[in-house]
Length: 301
Ligand code: FAD
Image 1 (cartoon, rainbow, N blue to C red):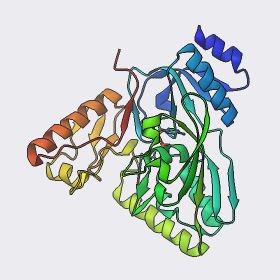
Image 2 (tube, rainbow, N blue to C red):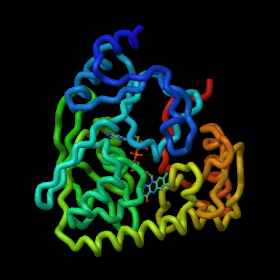
Image 3 (cartoon, protein in one colour):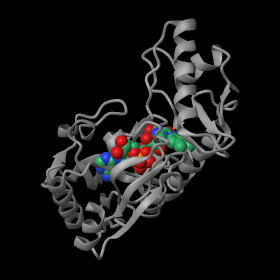
Image 4 (cartoon, protein in one colour):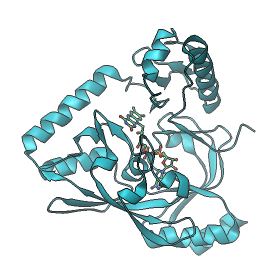
């Protein structure tokens, strides 16, 4: 019933009903969502949020779905994806970018403008909104190092801007993980550099990724956060768990911190393999591995 109303109230917004989310997730797993919505402006987002709150329909936003495992039961309610929000404006060293821009496009673009500071992010497969939410980072850099401010729509439908300090960034953490706000636009401040140096550094980092990561398979990147004083991948490797498989999901033989979908695996396989690895690593080293990847959706029906 509410879905018909959603379609009627927002005739200009692209809305897909009963859409299988494995079409979007990096792991190629996950069930259907009741409605998948693609707003194009921050006003669309605000109006949607107000409508959904009024009808008491649960909603959440997905970025490029590279750090989530959508459960096989799928998601009841609405998923909002911002891939149509791709404005990107550069003014001297200031870059204002909407959340739907993927990091590879952003880093390529600013490199062409001879702006340095975002090279670390060139191989992270998220979009800007997801990267801010996660404070994504690699090779010594993190989003927080170059972020000036973040414009959001709150979960009650207000516009708000946070400064870098207000975002309470930490290791793979930001304020948005507590507030549930929707990140709409981010302002970065970069520095002037030399295009050739920037491109060379990005090439170097991409090469490192290709050598170390199993990019040939679907995955969600590093499954676990780095436990203090250890590396998750090293613990998993030393516990001889590489190659261990449950259903179609396997602990990568190339990078023990990754779990790859080698044979039509499911979110349930992921869940079981993660629990197994956590248990074994605790048994052998007494270290509790905490997931970086986020499970969303219903349990299996
Ligand atoms: P999603 O996975 O779609 O979402 C992640 C979380 O962010 C969800 O809870 C979602 O609700 C929330 N979210 C997304 N967009 C918004 C928004 N606009 N407003 C509010 N909340 C939002 N990560 C690293 O940090 N460093 C790496 O080097 C790295 N390498 C990776 C390599 C591979 C091969 C893969 C598959 C993943 C890797 N990741 C890495 C993980 C992932 O790419 C990052 O965490 C990325 O920032 C997630 O962005 P996303 O857009 O895919 O977010």
